Image (tube, rainbow, N blue to C red; front, side, top):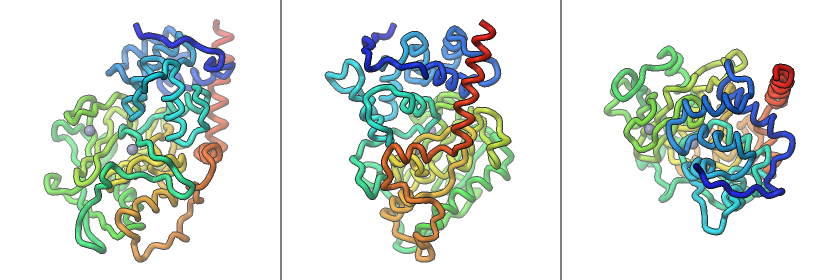
Length: 363
Ligand SMILES: [Zn+2]
Ligand SMILES: [Zn+2]
């Protein structure tokens, strides 16, 4: 069994825990589970592929409330939040997680923190750079970039399928190609780099594929939700998506529960391919988390400044043409609020409430 930190009064979660818990159920097991913790344990055990999975974290939470459990510590360590000495109650690692991702720094597993922990995300670990008022973008260590001749240069990319270990495409090839064409075009608009699709996968600079579970690069995927994809810094060019997701394109309002917008994840992972690490600006494309049934495809000023710091500006691009507001200097609390449309927030709150009422009646 996992060692469990004692629950202090400051770490106890008040009334909203059932709402958070049911929200997790809705995200992870939308059709069949109705909020019983025993069901959660059974499902979590069945889906758990590693000791550091979200399911593992939930297993412990089902009985322990909102403590920083060993399962949660392992989950955080996987994404760059290693435990530190003299942190028995986990406040330090929680504070690091909160400050890195633009949350109010409370040191407690408050609702916002739990909500973000439960949100599917990119598998690339987060960095812990001290953000300043004007830039929260980050680079990988050593600031790698594609080193080509100055000015406009060309990177080729290919989408591979049905060639082991790659899985068949989860959507019609035309839809996948269109999603990536649009995603690459967003970055090409702001930097002097062109992208062109090629059929020669072995010769492509950027290689895109859907993979499942342990696929040989030391970064196994974990099944539906959890980790959605990952990509490697230049000049690797490897961009991997978890084949187990319910990938979708187009209007997410019509998508299934748990559907993940391919174009949004593609745009994010291309940022890694170009050399950007995760940003602490919640609105930014390079923020690591993405809720299901959410489209997030427009580069923010933070993304643009980051990628232009590596490659310079496309001479035909003007910052004034950005449609997104500048969230780089917003307070963490305000920026976090901005990541949700009012409609989504209402839905996310109302559905757990209805489930809670239904469970109360059934039990
Ligand atoms: Zn990422
Ligand atoms: Zn991989």
